[in-house]
Amino acid sequence: MEDITTNELKERLANGEKPFIVDVREPHEYDEFNIGALNIPLGSLPQRLDELESHKNEEIILHCRSGARSGNAKAYLLQQGYPNVRNLLGGMLAWQA
Image (tube, rainbow, N blue to C red; front, side, top):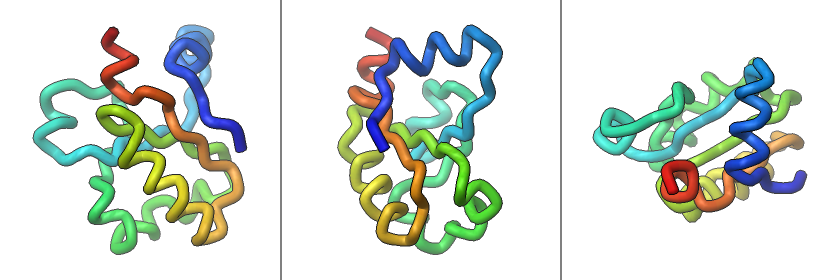
């Protein structure tokens, strides 16, 4: 599935959509600034997959600070059979730019 730009996600949120978003940053990063996503740090993802199970066939949007960790998380979820995973390009740096 194609990755998503910050503009596309902001537009969808402004239109009232409620996509399932996962923030793979560390808790202290999440506490500093977040967009209301579920916080599952990248290193915890394998142990916390059960929290995503009910969303397995939905679109899941992943983000981190710059897009690198969420890119790794996307690759991992695709390997685990999640078909509709998208990475937020540029992460929170692009979001706040």
